[in-house]
Image (cartoon, each protein chain N blue to C red):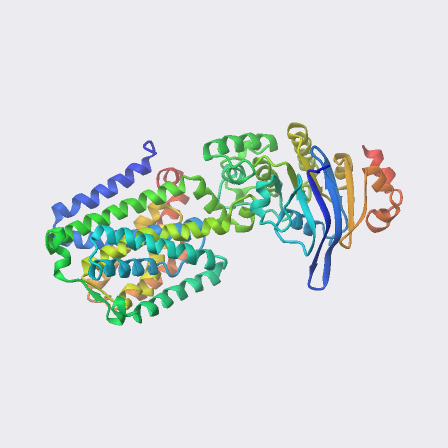
Length: 251
Length: 319
């Protein structure tokens, strides 16, 4: 069976550091996969390897059966992958609407300018930035910039969305707002979402499956419950043997 | 496009350039000729610096090489002026495309340095290439002006052709700014890595705009040196003029068509004043340098940026 994305044994070494080591996973459409792990575990590097920002040393990435290993990011986008950045990269001197229009124009669907603008407006409504559309991106708050990242990525109508810590640095109200956005996106578009997140409650409640990365290697994969009870995960990341109950109780 | 006020501002500008010398005479025409050439250089440099965020220190190479090839086609191969214009533009654009695919892998200061290298390398090549006359250059014989009805008529025709190239430069800058392609360039200017992740084919876009920004300056080069009557490598590939083009663009305001055009015009007037004044005639480059410093320090958006900060209306009108 061909998966939406299939990653087989990708590795990346930065001079002395083995950032990602033989990681394999797959995802299907409509699925939310959470990616957790301690700082420096290689989560963002894994994103970079999948989205074509850096080519892997070893391994293969296929999307709907097509090999996209080492493809330039703009070609990966054509196949239907979109991503956000952990450290936000707004196009500062352009308005919020223009930022999202770039995503719509050059994303998977390659819309013409007029259509792209219309579509961008729709997406801005979804993420709740419509009233800020004429503001220069540089003037947005950090929460606004995170929403902008999501809007830009969504504007190209991707099949797979990679979210890199879109909840980090937000206050509880903003977190709730962003979780709502992710739920809406899944409900309305049915695309696959791979999300890196440190906020455990959010990951556990949103994800269908969770995978845990530690020192560049896959430690565990499974349902949120299985992962939270996994002894290695508790040891390496959660730290508290009772954490699993606490997390599950919250839902 | 016809509903946009700025389109009509451009039309009015071109009409003014056509009408003014008809009433003002040859003196006005000579001043406007140089102003138009400067405006063409600034407008096309704006496509690289203002739109794409790549500082091209060597934009003059397009002007010089266009001039060299065009004058060669006219004097040695006996081509008519129109054919020389098109031929020079095509060859320069193709060379720029190939070169762009290579040097645009560099970013920031490294790209800027490479563009200076391109000017110097081209200049040495032309200076040592005998068919182009080596370092003494090429002279245009009187007979070359005959097909245009004689030297006097030729000067007028060349003037109107330069205005046509100016009109094309204005329109090109305006149309790219409002296009999907232009949006991609702006994204590259703001953050090239983010642009690529959003799907912008940055390497191709950059090479194309580098090439596009060479076409009209190459034509201006042919016309300038055809009128001049002689072309020498030292004059054709003068790095100073390249840097003056950056001053023009910064003065008027990079990123806007209006700013680039205004900067080219204002700089020519200013330069003309300095060159003819008794006190400053030897210092015009010193003053241009000081001007650039002041703009970068106090008004990085140039005149247009300064206006835009104060009135939101100008942002919509002066594009």
